[in-house]
Amino acid sequence: MGFGVVGVGLMGERYARILAAHPDCVLVAVADLDPTRGHAVASTLGCEALDPESLITHPYIDAVCVCTPEDTHAAVAAAALKAGEDVLVEKPLAASSADARRIVDAARRSGRLATVGHLLRFEPHYHAVFRRLQTGAAGDLLYAYAWRESMRAAGARYASRSTIPMHLMVHDIDLLRWYSGSDVASVQAGSASAPATRSTGGPAEAVTAILEFSNGMVATLMHSWALPSTSPSPLRAGLRIVGTKGEVEVDLTRPAAAFTHADGHAHELTEYFFELETGQIAGCLRSQIEHFVRCVRTRVAPLVTLEDGLRAVEVAEAILQAASGARKVTLART
Figure 1 (cartoon, rainbow, N blue to C red):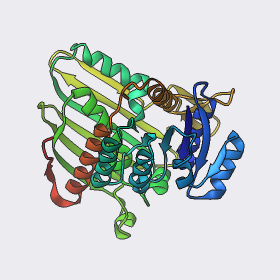
Figure 2: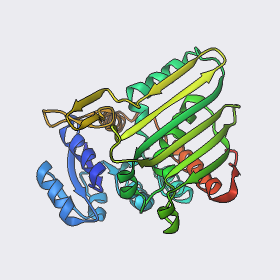
Figure 3: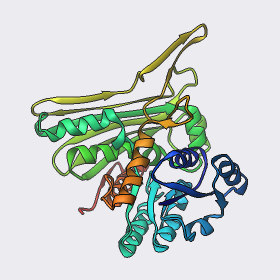
């Protein structure tokens, strides 16, 4: 089976490396809006470097991973689906719900397999919560609290093309929909930024949202990209869910690998993507991509559907609307 990756920035290059090392597929080509970057990755991995259009129409490519900026996801994914290829789109599915629906519609017309990269469903801690909730041990779900905080440097990197709801909250929106088996009915939200950011009209640096689910569960989300550079961990994340019979919790505030040295201390994130001495990338990103390869080969439905990706984008959009002044937004029933 031949695979291609469109968009080989930081995340796309990881996709390409994982596919190139996979024994059950061939990385045929990569493409990037920056040809120089595309050629550099292709040279390292021993595959072709093409422009996006040529990659999508390549006769030996069966599936495409779309890792371009989210405002280009719809055009690239729809073209790949129309060309008869299976598609994995990096999260968020698109920059807007309108573009996300465009991808969903293209997949329905093509009949091809398509999924979105909500990689936390493949992270062992979060997946363990799902398995425990499926047993009914927590009873009916009452409330949840989720947080995800990254450094100010991450905000500087992503703020020009994304927002906290689309870049960070979308992870936990998908998890809570998955855990509860229920859609979000309404959203309330507020946001905060440093005076300098507000004065320049930049996106919020911290967002808090309250989600009300159709099954009666409520959830509070507190997300930011405002941690100082001196923070010992580049990411603090976790969630807690309480039900009528019990509770479940994931706390990645202190990741598994911690180091103390003369200048202070630091944590290393190993859960998401971590390079081994063998050159392989380990972590839930690899598990997600291996799942996609297996789905393409066996024609098994993927764990995450495009509709899941669409719903997460719709909720993130509603949070942005609520935080900008609407305060409470009711989502349409599906």
